[in-house]
Length: 96
Image (cartoon, rainbow, N blue to C red; front, side, top):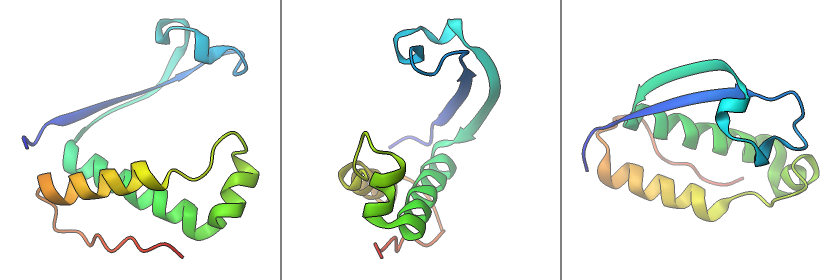
């Protein structure tokens, strides 16, 4: 896999209840970053693991009631990151 970059833009919308139906251009850009793909992927994996460790499955569901913890996508990202990125950081992201 190539060592691409990830462009991240966070938009703020006045009404979060209807913002999923609006284009990004309707929001206000409040943060932007460009990161190497391996750095971004590792940061996402680390954050996902931290959320699971701190809240557990039940706590995640209680806080983010619309969706269960995304075990499948997190494991897919971990597998792709380990297989395709040059990253010397630890990847033992065991569940609690």
